[in-house]
Every structure is written in C-alpha cells, then in structure tokens.
Amino acid sequence: MRTIIPRVCVLTWFLAVGCSCAFGAQDSLGFPQKKSILLEEYTGFGCGNCPDGARMASVLKDIAVGRFHIISIHEGHYAEPIAGSPDYRTDFGQALLDAAGDIGYPCGSINRYPYVGNTLNMFRNEWTKVSKQVLTEDAAVNLSLQAQVDAQSRRLQVEVQYCFTQEQTDEFVLLNVALLQNHIVGYQNGGGSQYDHNHMLRHLLTGQWGDTLRQFTKGDIFTKQYSYDLPDSIRSVFVDIRNLELVAFITRKGGADVMNVTAANPRIDNLQEEPQVSIKAVDLPSSRYAYDFVDVQVRNLYSDTLKTLLFSANLNGKEQRVNVAAQIPPYQTQTIRVRLNDFLLENNNTLLLRLTSVNEKEIETEEVKYSFLAPITITGAALYIELSTDLWGDEVSCSVKNLHGETVWSMGPFKAGEQTVLYDTVVLEQDGLYAIEFNDYWHDGWLVSPKGSFKVRASDGTMLGQNYSVLDAGDIIFFELKEGEPPAANQKFGTDRDLEVRVVANGFEILNPNAIDITGVEVFSTNGACVYRQSLHTNTNATVGFNPAATQMWIVGIKTAAGVKYKKLIK
Image (cartoon, rainbow, N blue to C red; front, side, top):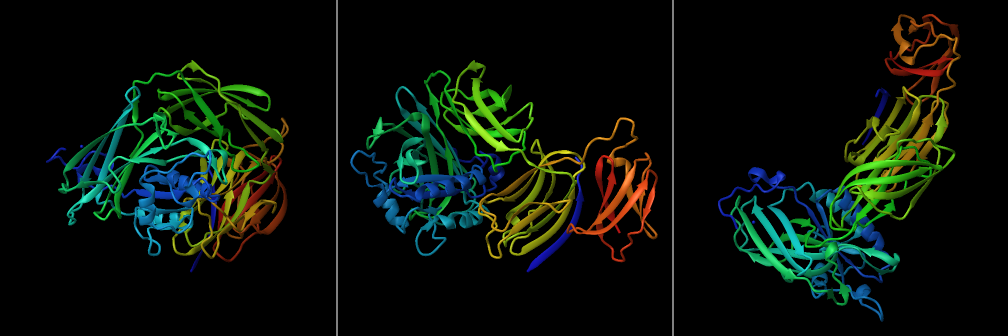
C-alpha cells in the first residue's frame, strides 16, 4: 500500500518493607518502567567482524538513551590468547556462551530470550529489529543501582534496589551484578593494535547465574548490598578503577529471560588528581558543511566533574575562544557541541580545535582537525523534494535546518507498515546557510523493501542530491541560498513580505503596496514543474491570467531586482 501526499510549505522562523515502589521518576506510585535491554555480546580479539558488531551495539545504546546496556563477553575460539597477547576471558564466559549458543561471531543475546530461532544468540543484523520490540514492553520489575569504590582500599560496594510491579508466580528469581571495564586498549582483528575495548566482562559479583531472590511482594522496595575487593589484575589484565561499570539485571529462575536491567558507573572516593582531559573529533556528516558548530568527544580522565570548558578554535587562520558549559562525570566521555562565534566560510575550510582550560584550570590537549568544502550555492528559494519511505516509515523524517542547526521545516515520521511517497515544495524566506537532513531514527537505513529514496532540486531544476539506497542514519545536503545582488541605493524596494498574491476571478493578483519593480512571474506545481511564465514590467498591482480549473496549491515566483520572491497560492 502506498500513500501519496503532495504538499506545499512556506517557512518562517534498597530492605524496606511496606514502602511504595517509588525510587525513580518512571516508577513512582508503582507504575512500571519500560523494559530496558541487555545485550550480551560474544566476541574475541581474533574476530575481524567484531568491531562492526561493537559499532552497531554502540549505536543502539546511543539511540535508546539509558535503556540499552552491553556486556561484552570475550570467550570461544576467537578469544583464546596467543603468545604475548592478553587474556580477556573470565571464569564465567564459557558457561554463558554454552547457554546462549555459539552460532558464529559476532553474535549476542538480547535479554536472554530466543527472539530469533531456537537459541538465545542472534547475529548482529537482528539486534535492531528485536530492540524496537523490547523497548515498547513494560517491565515486571523496576531496578535501581548505585556503587562506589575506595581508591585506597580498592573495595567496591554496590547497592541494588528492586520493586516488582506485577504479581510473580515463580518460586524465586535471580539477581545478577556484573562488573565491566571500559577503555582497555589492545589489539583487535579489524580494529588495529590500539583498539578501545569497552563494556568488557571482568567478574560476576553474584556468581554464575545470580543471587536467589524469594521476596518480591508487588509494590514493596527491597535492597541487596554487595562488596568486592578489586584485584590489581584479572588474568594479567590491569583492573583500572577509573573505568569500571556495573550492570544489574534480574532473570527468571532458569537463568534466562531478563525481566529488567540497569547500569551505573561507581563513584570513586579518596582519589585526587590533576586535571587531565583528551578530545577526539567527531566525523562531519559530509564533505560539504555549513553548520556553525562541530561536535567533539571529550573524555574526562580525572576525579572531578567537568563543568566549564574553554576551547581555542581556529577557522581558516582566524582564532577565536569558545566557552562551553558541560557536566561530564569523572572518567566518562561525552560528545560536546562547540559553537563558533564567527563562522565565515571559504571554498576550502580548515577548523583546528584545542581544549585550553577546564573548570577554570589551564590545560593543553591535542589539536583536532576538521576539513570541509563550502556548501552548494543556489539562487532560488524553492526546494522541490521527492521522498519515498521504506516500510518503516515511522523511522523516517526529513527536515530543513538553518546554520545554527535549528529546524525551520520538517516532515515525518510517517506511517509504519506501508510506503509513503511525498512531493513537497519548501519555500525559504531568508538568505543564508541551510541543510536538508534525511533521517532514519534507528540508523538501519531505508532498506525494507520497497527501499526508500529521495531527490532534491533547486528552483532552476538543479539537482542538489539524490539517494536511492539510504543507509545507516541517513543523508544530509548543505547549501547556501543567495537570491541575488542587493538593489541600488536609489531604487525603491521593499521586503518580500511587501508582495502578496490572492486569487481573483480570472487568475490571481500580485499585491505590490511598496511599488517594487516586478519584471516577471512564474508558476510552479508542487512537483517542481513550471506550468506558467509571463513577463511583466510594473511597480503596481498586477493581474496574472493563470487560472487552472482544478483546486490545487501552487508556488508563484515573482521576479524583482533583488531576485525571485516565492509565495504560496491556493487555487
């Protein structure tokens, strides 16, 4: 089934019995949390495709903010160490892999449930589809987790609170607490010698299959506490207290079927350090760019929260200082948006970025570099957009944004389960830098047959971009609108708001109260075809004999000394 939509838009600018289940915003008064996801990813340093699996898992974690948690389990053939290589395996991994099923790497189970086939594990191309389903479900138990580690004694203390929001018929359930470590740098086939391993399983505080829970009265909050003396290393791999992560989840009594999951980074006590920060450029979305900001990954490598950041930005040889407010916890990484005060582009552009101060303390970081071309220039303010979704139209959207990244026009998301075909005419009312973004919310492209596509043309028919195989998060086109040279100083000229159109008996009338010199008029259909053209030489109101029989929307282009002004006409 296909829905075809023609449109025209003009843009303007812990034990506690008897307490109610209320330890989080989502769970107040016993309302259930939405279920979160546990991906147990099976991997090994010898697996060449595993970096792509890790990338896909990271994307899903970013999309499902706070509700997608990863345990990376190094086990099996690809994880067997060779001479001189580290051993990332644990005492728990083989039993986990045996239970989940070794189907080939990379693979992973979602919430230990056989969503695909007869095994818990599935290949990475199934993770997104299953995640979409799980995130819509209510959880049978609400979970909360906090932890702290003492830097001197290396004692880790963990507290888990749980509250069941549904009556339970099982004799018992199992609470699991997993200790993970991030930023373990080492070799990875397909990722090089300095690969950054994250979410790596180091220990299970609650044993192989968890701690047995027999108290789960609906609506009451219960607390479990655990402590663990962190070793200096596990299988000769250093345990860095600055990069630890805890994941807590509850399964049914068989050790499978995760009822809910949560995660937290432990607070570190009794550790004092000097400021240390690293930065990394985030790839620009295309070779052309026209937003007055860039994104940069900032990694906090010391014990205080980063609250203020001062960047030195050099765009095409011109230096500027940029202050950014932040909230980056100790030893965490965030993507920070650095917005430039002066944004003057050349045909070829280079932006150099350094972090010079954090929390008002001077610091020096490595310099990161962004290189990009200027955007495409167009001289007519109308954009003609043809867009077809795939069968997941509810993930598809399109938007036009100005140079600040502010949305000035958008359409979508559309209906799931059918393809939507859309023809749209967008009229921009101001000169400047713009981007038109074609997005896929789940970052899996417009590929569910029939595949989606888009095409964008400027007023004069120039093709700005087209894509018949939209992949991953989507696509973006940057352009600059320049309607024409400004009028001479002695020429009487008003803004485009001084020109209006209205339907009259034999066509339509151009209202020209400020006596703007008009030299011609064109009429376009919503698919961008020019259907009428007339020369004019007037600075008064003018009647145009374009009088179609059908009721429809049109775009009228009025030619003036300052360029073409576009107006919407509904006949």
